[in-house]
Amino acid sequence: MNETRQGFEPLTRTGMAARAAQDVPEGWYVNLGIGIPTLIADYIPPEREVVVHSENGILGMGPAPAPHQQNPWLVNASTQRVSLRPGGAFVHHADSFAMVRGGHIDLCVLGGFQVAENGDLANWAHSPTETGRQIGGAMDLAVGAKRVWVVMEHTTKEGAARLLRRCSYPLTAAACVSRVYTNLAVLDVTPKGFVVIDMVHGLDFADLQARTDAELHRA
Image (cartoon, rainbow, N blue to C red; front, side):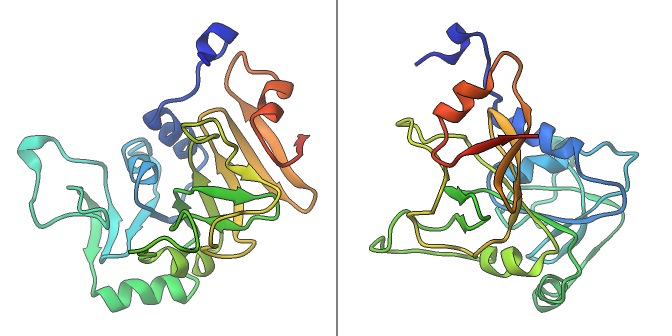
């Protein structure tokens, strides 16, 4: 179904990253997960002091560099070329995870396959029988960061809901997600479930609910 014919335009991957970047407060230490979340570093205003952490050992990561400024040894956890903000530092991998496990990261932004209305997150496997499952640092980040946001498409390519009453995929962590950014809306995870705080222009609440398994609540 073509959403543009219905009067609304879903956000692109960069649009989702830019929207999430708007809400990152001054002074926070932030980890950006693999996928769409890594793009958020490109949209944090340079005048806003946000310290971006990468679990492979960077504190003070900046946006993607111009091609002529790339350092082949300066990469994030997704092995993408990145820059270093003034005052940034390299640390040992163990020290980097000590920051995560010690509760020193204010926010972790992760990608996801599914999020449940109670904040459960599934972002590392499609089924219990899937082979070659690698969870990476997501489990540490999901439980170690002070808060977790998820950025993902609102539905699968086949149109199935990703915001669910209960996750059907193996969990990365239970009840860890506090906010979800999709290509259609921004939703807070609250004790009563998903609360819609923003939607793309032209999308109405009923259309959003039709694309969501869990019950939605108005802000």
